[in-house]
Image (cartoon, rainbow, N blue to C red; front, side, top):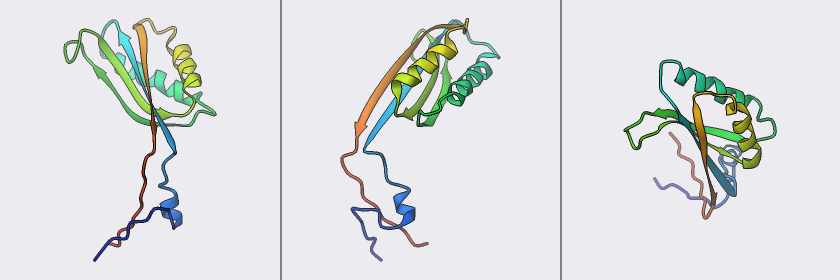
Length: 126
């Protein structure tokens, strides 16, 4: 029972799996002054607002969390990692949404752009 490896998507199901030629991962750290019971829910609310206003910015959410001081450094960090195409617009949205957040010291951002080097397809009958 061999599996046929294809260089091109040949079915509608495989066509939905085709990855973008270029992929941009964006990671934001919100450096926090303190951590308490309200921080997680407040960060989630603010990030939902950022995503709500991202009309025209194609994105996919990867992860969210909070690193407490001492786990890997001295800062308390709220982090958001996702994929997006329009990084400049996304940076503006983050800045606007967190500008008035009293618990934030600063926001750090990393943008990593990847280029697809190879993509193959296969289907499994089960």
